[in-house]
Image (cartoon, rainbow, N blue to C red; front, side, top):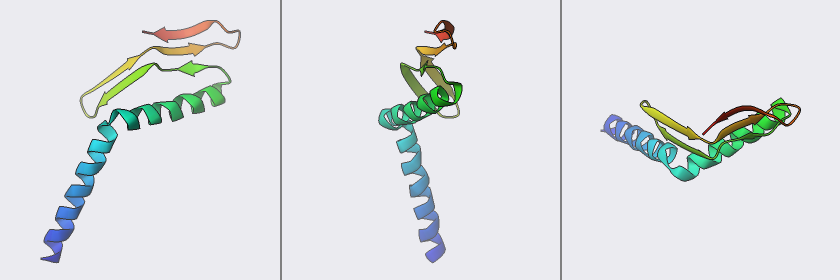
Length: 78
């Protein structure tokens, strides 16, 4: 009986985690953290306008922009 409850709890935890990872708010928070960390490490602006991640299937990345050290566009993908 306890093993069944443990299994159900684990399944519920995985489902909640999956829904959190799919939420737009979490994805925006994560991309803000990643872009600010990349900007700091590279010493140049990094920007992402929009991201949508469908785990195990698809990722949409819009407005990905990186400047070089002279302020010119190094990489842009709209």
